[in-house]
Amino acid sequence: MDDTLFHPGERMVQERTGERAIALLNGRNISAHIPAAASNFVAQQRWCVIGAADEGGSVSASLLTGEPGFVQTVDELAGLRMALDDPHDHLRVAAPIGTLEAGQSIAVLLIDLQTRRRLRVNGHVASVSANLLDVTVGQAFPVCPRYIQKREPEFDSPDTAWPPALPVAGSALDGAVAKWITAADTLFIASLGPSGEADVSHRGGRPGFVQIVGNVLRIPDYNGNSMFNTLGNLAVDSRCGLVMPNEDGVHQLQLNGRARVCFDVLDEAESTGGTRRWIEFTLESWRISPLNRPLRWRLIEASPFNP
Image 1 (cartoon, rainbow, N blue to C red):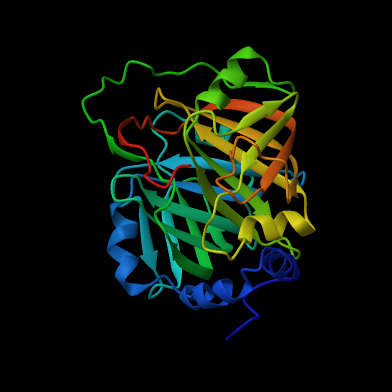
Image 2 (image 1 turned 90 degrees about the vertical axis):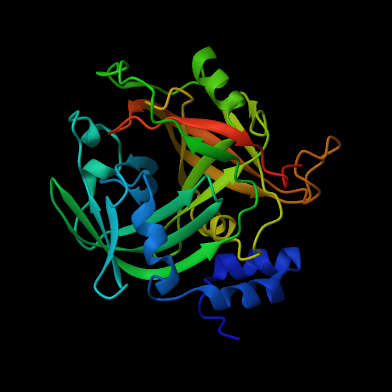
């Protein structure tokens, strides 16, 4: 089994949890190219999540939306191409999209809420312009459907929310932001490996699964694929960013800060699903910004895996 796929932080968490053998088994799904069977899946998506560090070193996650086909596989499955179509000229307000540079590490998560399929792609920016983003694939792998709430897009909603309000930012969790967080059943977290390699992953649960304690968010770490990409990254670099879509389908809440992994926590309410692990995210700043295109979803079914 190839253990070079995992860096020291990931291996440390795998060993501590006793799940190293499972991680090595699941690691066989990691490829240096987009799986051929996923090419059509990529082209069908209406949105994706981008993870990267900005020019100041802060790690951010952003939502990017478009019509099906705005993301395509290129270079015989060795790359992704994204059309940065922004009819409302708001794309550049959503860090880190506006600060990307060629050669920079980047992570892309493609996720279909209707089928609960997702594909993670980590690599580097090949080129970026006002209209196109090309990504060279370093690693690509499908991820299990657990904790994804099933949703379907709503196409008949009138586009009356545009233009949205200007971005709002702060450094403390006020009432409106706290309400947004505690109502969420989905979030995405971007992190960095020991060499600065970006990663972005999905977290889901029942509304309220994220707990707020002062300026700290507690995010439970449920059982997953045992590779511990996010937890392994946080073990070596505490910088990370979160993003949560809003129910209105127009705005996203981006949070930047630092996080640590807590093991063997006291969990009498079993909020971690039995793992007794959570991520403690300490907020440094938050920002509410509009999506480049509105994307509204209707909840069909909560994940049957939610604790």
